[in-house]
Length: 172
Image (cartoon, rainbow, N blue to C red; front, side, top):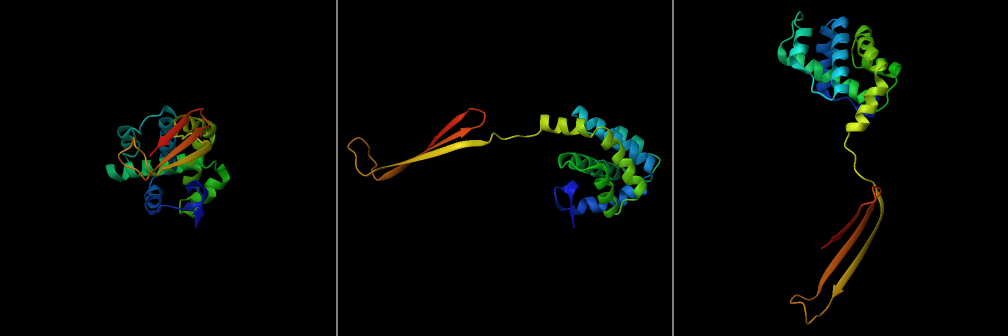
C-alpha cells in the first residue's frame, strides 16, 4: 500500500515494526515525545536521547527501543511535513499502519500546530541543487596537426547554464 507520508511509496519495514512499539507507549507519552521531536526539528538539533529516555522511563522500553520510537516519530513528522500531508490524512494513514486512534491524534496534534514552521525550516536547511537553465556542446575532431603529438582525438566541450547565474564549461 502507498502512503502520502512516505512520498507515495510503500511504508518502510522498520517503521511497521516500530508502530507496534509505539502502540505499547501511552498516548500522553507519545504526545510529549512528538512535541519533543517537533521542537528539536525546528531548532535544527539532534533529538536529545537523555530527555527522550526520561520521557519513556516509566514504560518497559530499553534505550534502543526508545531511540527507535524517536526515529519513527521523526520519520512520520518530517515525512508528513515534506510531502504536505493534511492532518486528517495523516491520522488515517497512521491508523492504517496499525497505530491506535489516540496515538495517531497524539502525533498529529503537535505536527498540525507547527506544520508551517516545520515546512519552512525544512526548505531553509534542505539540500537544493541548482536547476539547469540551458546547455550546449561542441565536438572538435582534429584529424592531423603539426602542433599536437596525438592526432585523431575528439575534444568535447559542454556548457551548462544554471538558474543561479553560474556557467560551467566542461572539456574532455
